[in-house]
Each structure stands twice: as C-alpha cells, then as structure tokens.
Length: 161
Image (cartoon, rainbow, N blue to C red; front, side, top):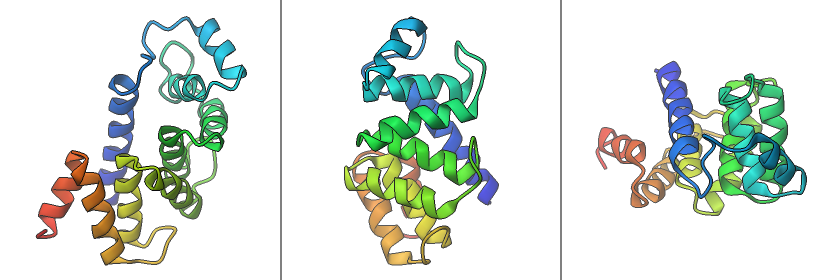
C-alpha cells in the first residue's frame, strides 16, 4: 500500500512538472534556464530541478535535482518545497528522511499548495516524520480536496468523508 502511494506521489509530481506552472520544461533553452536559475529565479530553479529529477533534456541526476529544489524552496517557492519533500520522502539524492519531508510539506501546505497539503496529510495518517494524527490528516485532505486535488478527494471518500 505504501509503495503504491509513493508511486502515486512520484507520478503526480511528474504530471505537475509537465503541465502546471507558467514555464514548460519541454523545449526549454537549457543554457537560458541555467542562467536564470543561477540568478536566483526560483521558478527557473524549480524547472531545472525537475529536468534533472526526471532526466528531461539532461541526464537524470537526483543530487543536482535536490540542489536546485533546495535553492527554490529556500526562497519560499511552494512547488519546490513540495518537490523537495518528495525527494526526502523517497530518498532521492539524499538519505530518506520523513521528518524533513514533513517539514517541507508543511511549508508548502501553509502557502496553500494542494500537493503539499495532500502529502503532509498522508504523513500524518501514517505517522511518518510526524506523530500520527488522523484529525490533522483529514483536515489537510479537505484543504487539498477543496482545491480540486483528486487524490485528496479519493482519500476522503475512502475514509467516509
């Protein structure tokens, strides 16, 4: 069951990177993107991280993905905070650390990021990196579901909400 959820999180991340945001990572001038990322453009840093994470246009490199997600996340970019949480949760480019994953999901969730809310809800429901708290999990699923997050809506239905 947990492996299925982790795969689901990774797939959702891929879909998010592919279709959400103002800048597509497909067909991007890598040199221009790298330059923007180096000039502290958080969106560019996030997009570059996604390219390294999934090997889109560059060799897959979790360590580089982690580096760029971290830079964007530290600037308060919510999508990068969620994606950094995924990296910690799955142990990609870093040792697996559920507590750090939950911390980054929390930062994204506080900004209203539906994926961060959903992922943090899962952490609370399973007691991974945080104390198990069913009520908090439901609250987070509801916030994500209100934004149209399909997996959160499904999770609520599964739990009779």
